[in-house]
Amino acid sequence: MTKKKLYRSVLTLLAAGAVCTAAAAPQQGNEPTNLTADSLTYDTRTGLITAETNVRMEQGTGYVEGARATYNTKTEEGTIEGSVRAMRDDMQLSCDRLSGIGQDHWQATGSVHMVKAGRTFTGPVVDYYPSQNEYVLAASGGTMTSADGTFSADHLEGWLKENRFIGTGNAHLVSPPRDLEGGGDRVEYFGMAERPYAVLDGNAWVYQGNNMAHSNHMTVYLADDGSAVTE
Image (cartoon, rainbow, N blue to C red; front, side, top):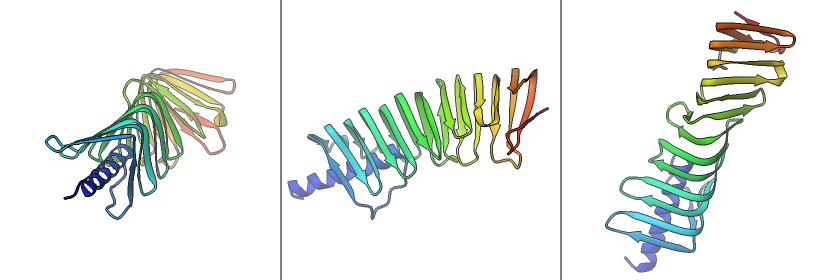
């Protein structure tokens, strides 16, 4: 293989691997790939590819860009760091560092701001597992914002395809459209139910309009007209 062909193969491997790993999108062999960077190295013994300075990787509709990127062709582990920006389909992400293992898990760290399925997630660390009903985990705490309001907790997780979210530790739910605010030690939201509802446990409280309720356990049903029924 000529040096030029080897260089092009390395570019394709890094662009396809890092974009698919980091942006958590299925790899499509017929999608064009492209990489630009000021410096590129490839260790054939370890399988490690490194791109540095002004890195931008593209595949199909997705891209990832940052200051430095690595991808191991043997382990399928990839990282990109330094003012990271990524986009794929309905996902947009910015963070300090993005790492991934295969196509089933990636982790964003440092000032994470992720938009996916009409929701915004922020926090110091966010993990995403696309094959597990689009599972999102903010184990160190985070906030989810949507058109219906905000949901924050010391430990926040959810399944985007199920529209179900759990907040543990100082869980706090605010919904301006419903004039509703509530919280507790644990709050679980079920958005796919015929009547969406939230279950609040441990020092639970709900405030709507001039009404306030306290209990160790409460279930709040959310009506389309903005009203809430507490049980």
